[in-house]
Amino acid sequence: MFAAVSDQTAEPSSPPLEGLAEAVRAALARTWYLDLQSVEVEIDPEGTVFLKGRVNSYHRRQIACAKTLEVPGVQNVCCDGLDISSTAGVITHEGALNLHRS
Image 1 (spheres, one colour):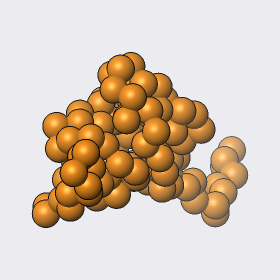
Image 2: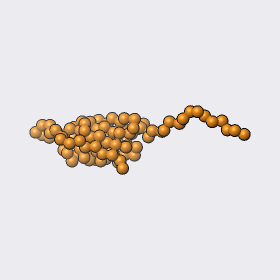
Image 3: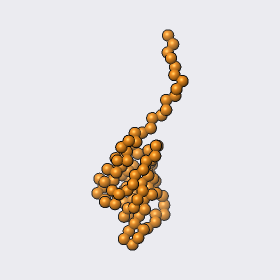
């Protein structure tokens, strides 16, 4: 007559993070830019991807961030860890480049 009611609350499910780093690495590899293939990928529990390493130009930094955001399961991308290097040495980036899925 009366259904048993559980006092346990269900925790919200997080996006599947298993394999997400590998999917991001694969997306970067599909760009054919060799410098993007050496980018380090770290992911926090909320699905934010942190890219770290060196790329050859600001344009490639933007490509890395945009391609990462296209990967299913990625909620945000933080590209602050991507430094831009050139044959003349390291060029520091002045602004943060962070993308968010809308």
